[in-house]
Structure formats: structure tokens, C-alpha cells
Image (tube, rainbow over all chains, first blue to last red; front, side, top):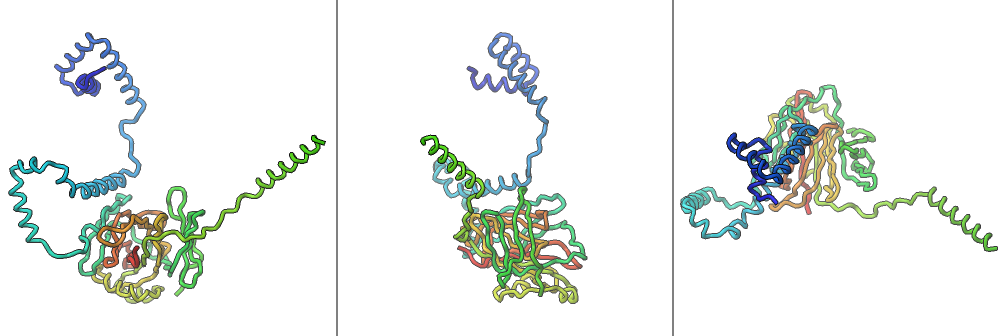
Length: 214
Length: 169
């Protein structure tokens, strides 16, 4: 059985990370240790096979969305863990840090200066993540104090053709058909106006009965 | 005699199987409404500086509780007129996706993520234009703070999607 040091050296040798001196020494060692040499040869063949049959880079499906979701989860984890940090870490270890007293004093002073009694959620926290699949569109959000609203701005959107007739609905309730995974949308008079569903690729399918007439 | 009885039983059994194959089981209709987390009001607003264009738009009667939305939009967007051209009052289902479709051109998919700690609802939103998703976002929607999505330009103005939390559990 290899020790961790041997495994580490073997991996560095396979990955070509050793210096010339280290490499010479390791290869001399391989000549004296047949067991290690056979393992090295096996791993080398395996590595070569993998590199031959797999592309050097594989595209990650929905990489941007995946990354944004990871960032959200990390932020949530940090928020969850921060209140319990003190109970996990040793208080005495923290007290040894030389910058602690200075930082604490600065934080208290800053907190007193900025503190305002409010129970409303912070405006910046209302939008946790934004993902835009198209590279031609840039999205940003902000909170408008004057309108008391969260604003999501999408720059770079393609303009709607002027001759396109935008048909507005006046929908008042809906019913879900669990078996068909569809939602029927009704107007104020109880008339079915549209049916919304999704097909296999999660694309929306909207079937309309009649447009809204004023 | 025994052989005759066996034959009759076999015939009856075969007949029963054929009937079972011909008549698929009837799916019972859902008797319970799906659980909901909230109710939202979504609207599509046409914002413009062209009074004639605004007047020509087919409009909907906006409930009194949302009547101040055009005024609030005027504080955010640089347009003089804000006309609600479509609206949709929609339950936010707890276990199913919900669609807010004030128009067939621009609509919103909502997945409930449950109540937010500071009030309101955690929602995953997808803003769609026909078959193209323009943006996906995780956001908190509160009763005090509507969401305005600045949509595409149209006829010298702009289409704005509005989402307001009406009720939350």
C-alpha cells in the first residue's frame, strides 16, 4: 500500500509537475521498486486512454445559470453559518488576533453611526440572483425608494416590431389540470381565455381562445 | 363434465381480460384545489410619450387597489403615459409552476420558494418573450414593494411588466 507521500509523488510525476531533478530521482526510484513502477505504468496508460478518448474541454450545460445558483447557495450558507461562528470557534483563539480590538472598535463606531430603527428588509436583498441566458442582454436590479419598487432593467433587448399587435388579456383566475400539467386561464366572466402548458424542454406552450376586446 | 366447466371458466376469464384491456381505467378528476402560497397581480403596461398612441391602446379596468401603479411607474421610468393593456390575477401554487400571462407576448413563470424571513414571498421568476426566456431571477416579493421589469421598446415607447403581491400565506 502506498503512503500518501508516494501517491502525491506519483500524481505529480503523472501530471508532469516535477522539476527535472525530482523527476530523475523519482524515475530512479521506480527502477528499484517494481511494485511502484507497475502501478505508475498502469496509471500512465489509463491517463493516456482518458486523454485520447475525452475532449480536453467539455461544455457545461447551462454553465452561467449553474454558477449563479452556486453563488446563491454559497451566500445562503454563509448567512446561515455566520451566527454560529462564535460558538464553533474558540473565543480565546480569536482574542489572540491582534487586529480584533481595533476592528471591533471600528465596527461598533460604524454601527452606531449607521444604525437606524427599521424592520423593513434591505432593498438590495430583494433580488438574490439574476441569470440572463442571452449574451446580448445585460440585466441589473435596484430599489427605487421613491416608487417603493424593485426594478429589473434589461439592457440590449430586441425591440418589438411596431406592426406587432400586442394582445392584452384580462385574466381573473386559473385552474390547474394536474394530469395534463396545464393551467387554464379564465377572464372575469368565467370564460376560458387561454391554456398554458410546457412541452418536454420546459418551453411554454400558450393556446389562446380569443383575444381581449375592450 | 369437468372438461366442460374448465372450458367455460377459461372463456369467461378470457372475456374479462379482453374487456379490461379495451376499457382503460378512468382517471378521477381532481377534487381538491392545489395548495397556494400567495396571490399576485401581474400587468403589462405600455409606457409612452405619445398621447395618441396611448389613447389608441385597448385597456383593461384595473382594480382600485392597483390604481396607483401607473403613478409609481412614472417615478421610475422616463415616460409620461402608462397604460395597463393587460392584467392577470393569479394564485401562486405551492407545488406547481404558476404563469402570469397579461398578454400572449410577454409572460412570467413563477415557482414559489416559500415565505421570506422578513415578510413577503421568495420566488423564482422567469420572464418570457414568446419562446425565449429573457431573464431568470430569485427575488423576494413583498406587499409593500412591487416588481417592475423593463421590457422591450415598442412603437416609440416601452413595455413594462408589473408584478404585485396581493396576498401571502
